[in-house]
Length: 515
Image (cartoon, rainbow, N blue to C red; front, top):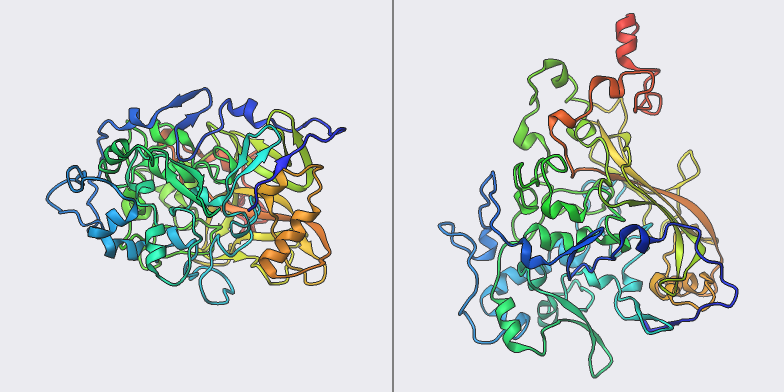
């Protein structure tokens, strides 16, 4: 990604759309400070011991004895020399991480309907947020006044700047940035080497004493480390997922009963840590799942009949727990529900072009059947529109007639993306260089992406509407805040019964004696 300068066009209209800086006050740095709307809380203030309701057993893949908590690394070396210092003791762990979805950004696809085989993930599919990381990987894009507008998708990759390869080499192992996940005080930034290459380096890389101190304060990944990337993905706080907000690092049980300080006090790894650097669980809109042998579900801890009231337990076979226990999302930071890449908007305060975007907060989910499988539109395959005419980026598979399907809550994200006329393929956009364009014309950045991604020249494209259903699994509320009967079973209830395959409210029909 080459560096470019943005020039303010002479007659550019000012943005009439949500001004992100005004809404959020401060734009977060994923690898810097943890940010909420009006305040910045340094990570060092978050390191007080947290009482955890369920004990965290250190993973054997991290080389920690079961009879002691995860140890720091004080005194194990004189000077930290980057990843090669870690490899002296943890080469096996580095090799398992190299093979993980967190490093490869792709993995096996056991839940993808019609999957072609091989490994898929964010690195080789097209998405409706930043479109694709391969063509927006690394580099600085600057505004005319010198401000950095973007640094590439590698900002949230646990590597030092090289794109992951399938072949394990020493160069690739040295590319792993262990401290991103294992040192809460670690910060890094993008620097240009003498040979012109870009590299993510510790901001203390010229302060050996400070770097030695930070690198020896090692721990299992904590929420604050996970949220560096997962809460800021999509370009801003909570833009992408909707249910992964910076607030989770320090919330009460009314915000999230599992992670709240007065709730279970969980860390992310209490649910998601698997073996060999693999992660349990899968978002409903994601292609890959690396631990299908260890699925993650509420019933793992709560059982299939967790309620004192039996009529509620009658729902659990067809209604997932989250449908009632996540009544809304985007509770602290608004989330992105629509991106129109075809409509450029000039942001005066940032000196850049941006896409038209709609942000919403306190959003009520959309409900749909989901049997664990997902239908996706894959790169290099002709699109197959839904009955609505929209192209499915990712939609859940399931129906009322599918016995193993349940009703789940979803965030629905819509977008407008380019489609190749000749082949009916979705095409990504070199989005970050587009921000610094002189006139807001996005056409050359679609053409450049088609060349980089598909090797195609002189393409013609048109704009199409897309849709993605994103499962909601975080920000679970306690029972006294969950949905009640009338939230669904009333004339103004939140469920669209016909969309779910019912002629009407099944409770009403049951009381009337109808089948």
